[in-house]
Image (cartoon, rainbow, N blue to C red):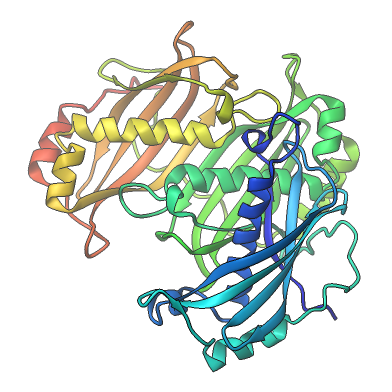
Length: 453
């Protein structure tokens, strides 16, 4: 039995590819860093070592062999082991694969030193951590598995593993909502690949995975350095769409971080509309759906429901255009950036409630989304211009519900709609607070009336 552990699962973003049309070397290094964090966690060298013992690992030497190209949209997975764990030294061995084809794309041997983060010098590995690495010892010559499709557990497949990067955390000090959605969108690609519809088949059929709906509930904060794992299963199969259940976990504690109910479709890139799910893919999805063990999807968030179109009283909270680096290999805006627009709009909505960024910093108050419902009406492409309008739907003691519309700047047609339940919280205590009176009064002036029916 191999001591290798899967330490990364994700995909190649279009903006990670250089003028030669393949993933640039710097992003291989990023995956090596991500994989090392998971390997360390597997050995017991997780956040406790970082926060309590003030220890880390600093890379001092690397030998990397690039064996096959990776292109935009390719799905990738990394497995890692340890060749050496003695004294101050750790030598990791990483193998990067195309998750769809099983092709070995890169191997890397990285020598690191256990590092005292306070005194900024190398130190010996603690005995318990060094012992933990013994379960990961490899030679690097172990048999390489073919395309490793994850095994189903209760109808779920492993569809993502990656650490939280500091640049993914916002002014509240926690993982920003757009990076939750980024992980769910990547998980949808991994799930479809496991069902037999991977990137190469999508390219041949000239289709994109198009989101139609996401309902996301956030259960706990995630901070930089946390390792997140994602599992995904099929709720149901229709002629031209799949309903999917995602569960995102913080790996060290095993706690559930967020759940998402998604509906996705295959959309023709020539603009001719949604394509039927291929029969073999639908059958594989139905077999997986029959195994799913999961709670029922959550119900409505409150009344009134979000309007079908913007209503009087909604005000502009965001404006911009789709940049090239925000697009997938299809030329369409990546799903993550719908949420990025809504996140930007939320900051302007707070300012409209007399709670500017300066005021929040001065009072030690932050905000957090608890529940997001996003309906997608049309894709966005490079160069498309948009703006957002926002209105408050309901005020409660600690939470409030509001609605964003993302609109086309030329036609003014809705692109997407988000309904959000959010809370204010104490940034020191990291717990929800009652909405201050002046904020409630300001938000009251932003309440909109939703027509019946």
